[in-house]
Image (cartoon, rainbow, N blue to C red; front, side):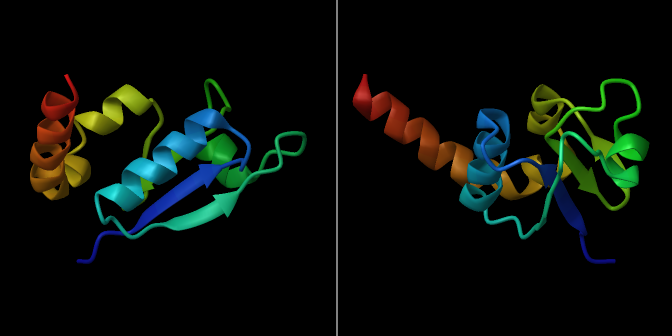
Amino acid sequence: MADEVILLDFWPSPFGVRARIALREKGIEFEYREENLRDKSPLLLEMNPVHKKIPVLIHNGKPVCREKAWLSHSLILRRSLRSRLRLGRCIVSEI
């Protein structure tokens, strides 16, 4: 089964921008869905019923709502080892 990744976001959100950059940097294909924060979609309310906030990463129908949880999510870890090593070298070289 192919990975289905959906990002619920609002374009000016700095947290959403960070999520989009991270997903693109790691080469993860995702579907971007813009949310209207005044009239929240049923998908947003279903995937993040407690906080009702964006961004929400949906992986194969299961929400990953907190950004810190994304770092330990198997989808990100599986595809990011090379990226994390490359990023680590960049950070070390800048110090």
